[in-house]
Length: 65
Image 1 (tube, rainbow, N blue to C red):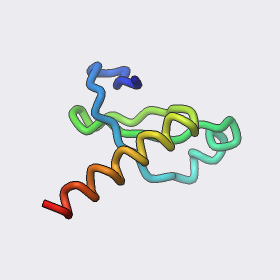
Image 2: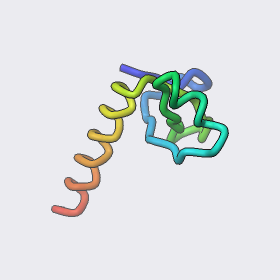
Image 3: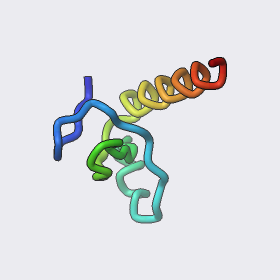
Image 4: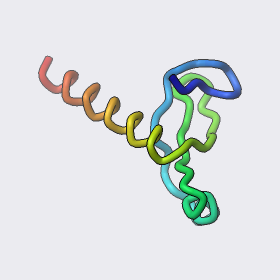
């Protein structure tokens, strides 16, 4: 499980790409943001995909309620 390197929380979400993220994308890194402390960090594309998939499931569950 991926945790925030700043506060240790496991509540991460995908962050928007910025122009300066291009080099990180070449290195197969994706920006993520902590939902608690709002700090930005980078993770692998595979881990980011899993975070995005979890976010989609969370949104789907909220819409069904």
